[in-house]
Length: 230
Ligand SMILES: *Cc1c(COP(=O)(O)O)cnc(C)c1O
Image (cartoon, rainbow, N blue to C red; front, side, top):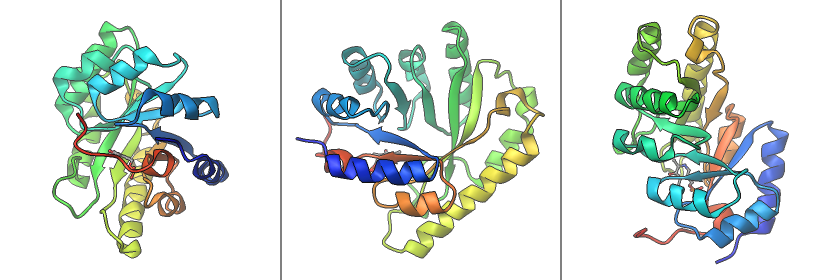
């Protein structure tokens, strides 16, 4: 168990050159590894499981910005609502409404990204382009005073085919741009829509080329994960 300091330096510099944010994905990894990366200056960390995230939040320095990047169930929003920095994988209106409710309870505005399904694989969660357009168009009619929709998140196909992955990222970037332009100023909860979270260990450089400004990287920094998790 050790972090890869050289990989961190390299990724950090590429990410900086692209004016992007690096989210270090620490799911399944021990507190000590997160602390080690923290000691090198990393502050944004991503987790996929609610219980694991709340445990780590308790144990680690309070200036860490915790990103929830997994599939979030509505009934678990309350556990992370008091402190979460950004929820990446919002994929239903029901979940949006619950996050809004928990934001209100905690007297804060919770930043979210809408997850868009861009991969070929059936298993990946997210809105398709039409569902997304529908949601955006009716935004005025839903009460979202305690949510700020900061942008979009997507995962490309898990594939060696670089052209395919590149096209999927490019497609997401186009959707991102069209929403930024069309909705700016019209919906309060979309007024800070400027984050495009795409790119992981295997494809982050392609994602940055296609306009990503937030990458989520785990295994390159922390080593391969061992499954099952718990
Ligand atoms: C696990 C995970 C990552 C990081 O994956 P790596 O390939 O280890 O970099 C990024 N995004 C999401 C949504 C994940 O679940």
